[in-house]
Length: 273
Image 1 (tube, helix red, strand yellow):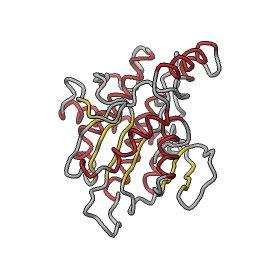
Image 2 (cartoon, one colour):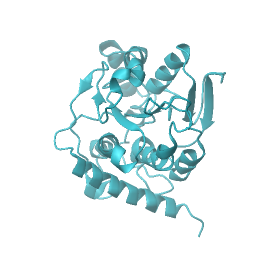
Image 3 (cartoon, helix red, strand yellow):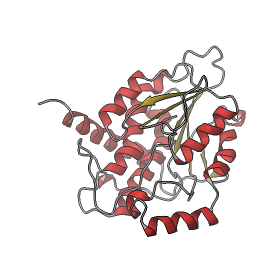
Image 4 (cartoon, helix red, strand yellow):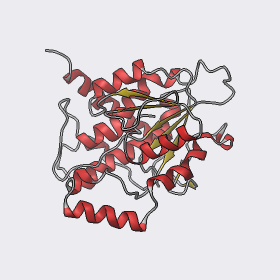
């Protein structure tokens, strides 16, 4: 699991471990104590260089499911990583692309039983109608919070739509949890601010909890009903949803091509001069 140290990812990881699944969590910190079923790889996934290293070094030969849950929210004013990438895009999408580029072909290839095709699940609200701005993927031509965040949503849908063709091997699926109480909005509302506290309190009252979402979603990750299928997306209750209108294979391929070009520029900027 790429993520799993907080919010929805943490809830899914905890329930998976409780049901006997062996889970490896990748992220900055792990609150739980590692065990026979829970291991941890530390990485800063705002760094494309570290994301590439994770993709190269992570042992995924015996993995059935790879779940991406890492995410943040675009800030009120543009934040840029040392590699020159808008921070939300780097954490919530481009790091996933970097990792998949390195490990997709190895996923699940050393399992004793390979009749079950390995799966990649991308959490990030695919199907929400966001096509992104391919011409300004890095939000450099006039920054707006929702426009920048929309690029991450579109990027994750592109991975679901075009992942099988771009990174062959596993099947690709999308997860759109909707609005759930978590820490993801702290970046835009201000950590611990009155607006942040009030928003999360209201969401906690009106929406499902991370644990409820995890209970609904965990069975989807392993259901035999998905064998032989690809590109399906699932909403807040773990039921299928439609892709975004206009988000066809051509748009997805174009989006990923521009994303890989941005990723390459970020990696080159990290090289010693």
